[in-house]
Image (cartoon, rainbow, N blue to C red; front, side):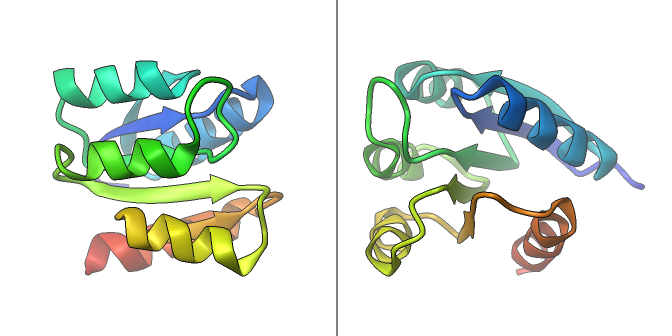
Amino acid sequence: MAAQGTALVIEDDDDIRHLLEVVLRQNGFDVEYAATGRDGVTAVLAGNFDLITVDLGLPDIDGVDVVREIRTRAQGKIVVISARAMEKYRTLSLEAGADAFVTKPFRPRELRATLTEILAA
């Protein structure tokens, strides 16, 4: 697959972060990661990412606040990936600036389809 660019995964769960890294690399991304919201915001300020995934349940800052903060600085697409399946979290995430919302647990095929859709937009 052709190179897609650079992705940042903001996720505190090692297993999910690893799965996201595998899926994104298979889809042509170079992947960096941050385990906290603060580290994620710092990474966005320091880098240029084509795609950023954000977990809502981060240990230090709520993911919606992370999305709100990085949206003003990030040029790439933002995908929230969260176990918070209630519609209000999807709405809050999209209103904060996310381009898509994926519920955990997710299937890698579902994530790939979402990425294809938002990257084509």
